[in-house]
Image 1 (cartoon, rainbow, N blue to C red):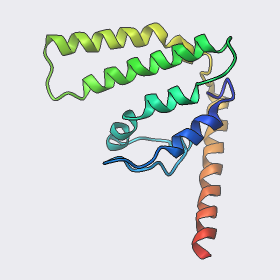
Image 2: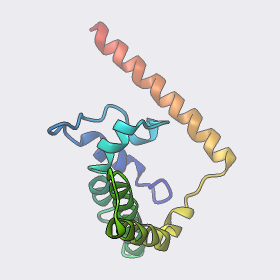
Image 3: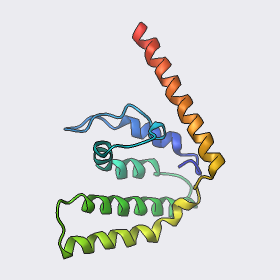
Length: 145
């Protein structure tokens, strides 16, 4: 998303996902989250593919193949994750997991283009901290009113 300058769109869609049934609304943008717990992973996995797909709509014709590969990769990873959450497995579910894992490896190279080095990671962590502080100041200001 960052490589193609679509991160703002992604975060806007991420934050706009409404509460539904047992899914709470998101209070932090995706890039503000530094660590996920099991419950958050489970909740997020239910709408992550939709957010990714909506975020990558549009773009130039040259971007479409990369965007489609990113969607395919995300779908395969989520499929693997959903099968992995089963309480028990048989030969069929293990085969489905293996297929999803192979499918993921077929498309994962699309994400290597945006892979961050140490300097970029440090910069991202500093930006995340800055965003969290700014949000907390805004919340305090609104609470005082």
